[in-house]
Structures are given as C-alpha cells and as structure tokens.
Length: 119
Image (tube, rainbow, N blue to C red; front, top):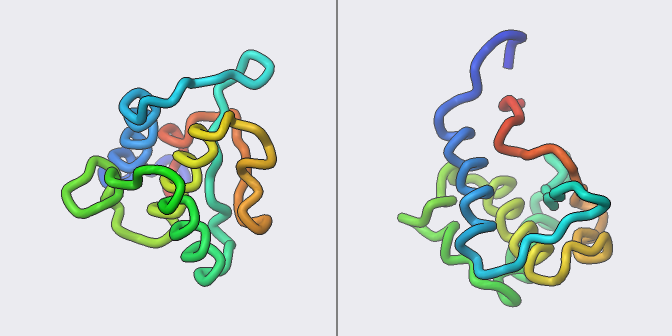
C-alpha cells in the first residue's frame, strides 16, 4: 500500500472482527504487563504450516467466525483465517507466549491489528 493510502474496507472489517471476537468468544481478555496482546500469523509463513495451524487451532476452539457468513470470514484468504484461528487459540489458552508459537509462524503483538494498514 502506498504511503498515505487508506486501508481497504475488507481489511478493516477483518481486524474489527478480531476485536469483536474477543468480546464474543467467551474468553477472558488478559493483559501482559498492562497491555493487550494479539497472536498474529507471520505474512511470510508457509501455506502448508498455516493450514496445519488453522486445522489444529480449530480442533481446539470454535472457529465458526471464519466460516462463510461469519463476522471474520472476509477477507477470505489463508493468512487471515489462520490469524483469527491462532488468536482464538492463544486467547482461549491464557495468552501465554507458548500458546502463540505455531511452528514459529506467529508473532505476539501489542498493537491492535485492526489499526494496521494493508501490506
């Protein structure tokens, strides 16, 4: 995205969905050193690893929000769906660093992903 350009509506909806997900998942939001944290997929992660992460996370937590018609379905791509599933798992399991490892394909961030510009 060029400097000064605005993020697309679908990206904003995706990240807004992540935020809403915290409040609708039934999980307790915890703070790490007074900061909210999110587990996000590395954009450079291999598709095979992301698919494995998506399948594993969704076997452990309810991933209905990324199904067609769900609030986090769009953007409909592997990185976005894996990021939502990985963050759901991370939140449901205590927001510990080891709950966001995912074969070294994820990062813990302290800035709200919904405010990030599209890459």
